[in-house]
Length: 157
Image (cartoon, rainbow, N blue to C red; front, side):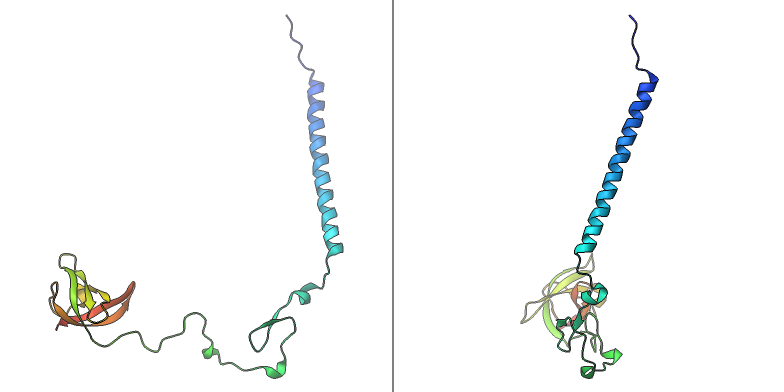
């Protein structure tokens, strides 16, 4: 039995037909986009940049009117602080009294519990002035470390 193959002309016209359809759809989308763009232009109130401006008045409130130049205050550059305010000195407190809550000599660190507040402070072997062991009474100072306050200059008390 002989097979009937489609004619090459038919295949070409079918391909062209799909291309024409795609081109027609693309053109319609483009026209629709242009029509919506024109519609938005016609419906917008406009006004440009001035209608979008907002100002801050002398009380720090947002307003649509520009500030009154007579109420202007000069501010020194060094008085402007962005972020966390500068500290005059680092947080270093006076001596504290406490007991060694835990100390691992093989690892070189431990914790001291302050008398009164029962607050725990991390202590590293480099912060010790005397050798200490668990439950030893100690006198220490504190400094801010990467994870909070650390006990430093620790000596037996």
